[in-house]
Image 1 (cartoon, helix red, strand yellow):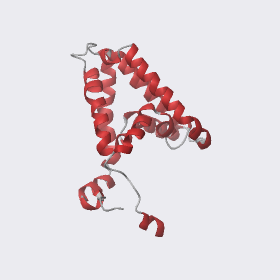
Image 2: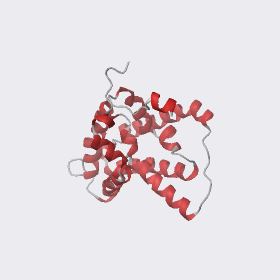
Image 3: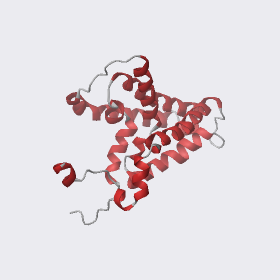
Image 4: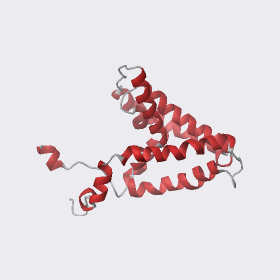
Length: 197
């Protein structure tokens, strides 16, 4: 059944070294935030029209189509470098360093039952907001969308352990998970190794 599978980590040694290096994911996180933060701020203080706005062009003309296109190739890899998650993770680490405390565990049974509905409602809300207020042509509204999603990641990262927002509640992550099933690349355990060792 594995006749058409190719283990990239074995066949591309540099790829394995990259994933084991200090550059992944923290190095990519720094680059991602160096782009995300200024682009979000420019949505509020920069040019607002579609032709000249860096925020609108980068978000709606490049990131969104590119994000959808990448599903078929790398699946959920975006979630490893998502700026919403990065901000939540960084602020979680900082808050736990300042105020050490136990974080709550997930109510997995409840989330398995209702999480998909929350994702669906969140995605529909974003879709309606995008269409009714014409987000692709209003930079400040697009920046508000980015901030609201980031706020969700930050708030839930402060309360719950292990990225509850990303796994169960993020509307973009939920869409990512659904379409990632089409990806030609997957991360899978080696059963013979994991089962015996």
